[in-house]
Length: 228
Image (cartoon, rainbow, N blue to C red):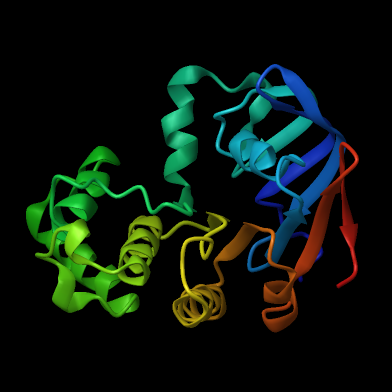
């Protein structure tokens, strides 16, 4: 890593809220371009609260935090959409719009983030579907897809705007082992080929062994880097 690399995520002495209560005290965390970083820990230990702070769903209670160039302590509400457009987010429960096709789901995101040219939109949709192996599913409705296929579409959605950073919150939590492995391989491929940093919240520590990265553990109201 180059010494002058600017971190995509930087927290210093940050207190992280879960609801109205502090769940993580004094978080120090930096994520640089191209890295894979895991946040592991028991249910309710603050993993998802960190995730929500990065996406500006939760306000930063104390300390400093920057994400993709935005200062979380001084982030104006009108700038939150701009921040989120620089991130790709993958959820455990996919969060696809169930009333429209795969193609329409992806077009909705592109239009919401400023794309206007219909030909360019169609090309980009085809590119991301090809990247996740789902080109034949463009006209399917989400309910016609398996869980693994829905998660691949969710990853396609996450990479639409070519983000420098993907946040994945338990992305394999609702999938069987074989399907989960395919999703992990896909995220690893995106990391290698595009240099996209990935921050993954997971309770499955075996993932960290099979796909090595830096590991942070949430425990006893703290989050610290550990060795695998």
